[in-house]
Image (cartoon, rainbow over all chains, first blue to last red; front, top):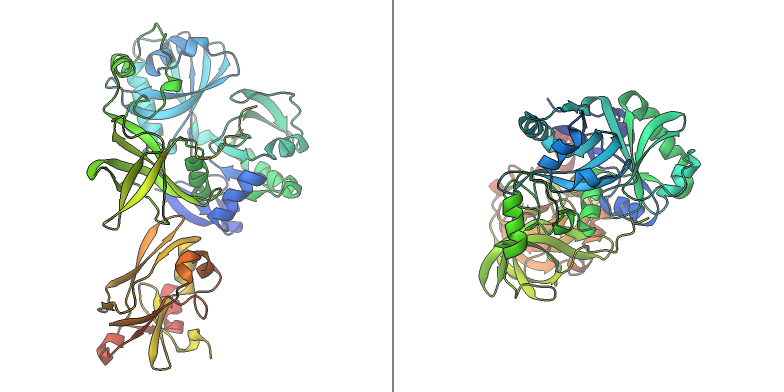
Length: 366
Length: 126
C-alpha cells in the first residue's frame, strides 16, 4: 500500500505531479523543477516532508544508548541542540543517516529517512537490549513541513515566530498561527530555513497559512525533484545513493561528523578509527562535467583509462547551470581537486573536473 | 493547418508529419510535459540512416534520461541545429520551432500501420 501524507489533497489541488517515493505518494514537482529550485535559492519555498520518520528515544539510559549506536558524542549534546550523525553497523557501514535532537533530560528525537524507518527502528531495538530505554516510532502521528530559503526567517516572523537568535541546528517549542509545534532550524537545501514538526491534524491548516502568508515573499510549494537538485548542489548526501550499508562515514567524506576523541564504544568504531588512521580504499568526490552531458546514478567513472568507481548522485545544478555529480572512486592521491576524470555516458567517455563539495556556497549558518 | 492536424504519433511519443516531400520528426507535447524541464538534447548527424524503432536521439530532463526512436525508417537530411544548445526551448514549443530532425524516407505503407492521428493518440493516453 502506498501511503499518503496529510497534505496529499493539497498537492493534488496545486496540480502537483505525483510519484511513488519510499512507499509514499509524493509531489515531485508543481510547475518546474528549475523554477522551484531557484525559488528556494532566491526567496522561500515550502516542502511537505511528512514521509520522513520521527522516532522518540527516552529513558534513564537514552544518552548512553544513543552513544552506542552513532559515532557522534551524544553525551555532549546540549539541550535543544541538533546533531547530524549516522547509525553505524559493526562493519562501519550505515543503516541510515539522521539528525538527533535533544528535547530534555534523557529525551531525544530522531528524524530519519522515509525509506529507512523500519530498518532503523529494528536496528535500534536490537541494540537496546541492555539499556533502560524506550524507542517510540511516532512517524504515523506527525507531519513535517520545511520552509527553506533566504526569506524563510521573514516568513516565520510574519507568522508569529518571535524567538531571537535561534541558532542553526537547534530545536525550539514555539507557537505559530496558534499551533504548538517544534521548530528546528535545519534543512536539506544549503539555505537557511526551518523544519516544523506538527501533529497530522494541524498539517493542512499550517500548510495553507504558510502559502498565504508567504505570498509577499514569493513563496512556492517545492517538490522532491527540486529537493534533490538543491541537496546535490549543497553537497549533501542522499541515503541509498551516496550512503549505504557498505559505505563508512570516513569513505563518504563525513569525517567531520565523527569525533576522534570519543571514549565510549559504538558500532563499527574499530573500523572507523582504523580508517581515520590508515585511510580508506574508496572515497567520495564531487565533480563537474566539462561538456553538456549529464552524469547520473551508477554511471562508471574512469581515471587514466582505468575504471575507478561509479557516480552515486548526478544531475544539473540549476544555480550554476553546470552538470555535477558525486562518485565513489578508488582512493588514490592523483584523484584530487582539479584533476580530470571521465564519466561513461552512452558508451562514450566525457571529461569532468574533480571539485570540492559543496558546489554552491552554503548560507545556512546562523 | 497546424502540425497537430496532420501528424502521426507513436506509442513512444514521437510525431512525424509530411512537409514538402520530407518528413519532420519530433516529440509530442505530452512527452515534453511528462519529461519536465529539458536540459540536454543530442541529435544525429546529417546523412545518418535509421530503421523504424531505432534510437536516433537522446533527451534528458532534470529528472531523467530518455531515448528517442524513429517513427519510420529514413535518412537524416536536416537537424534543428539550435536546439542542442538551447534544449529548454522544447518546453515552449515542440512543433513548429521545436522539431528535431527532417528525413527522407521510402518507408513502406506498413510502417505507418501502428502510428496514430493526434486525436487517437490523445485518446489512447486518457
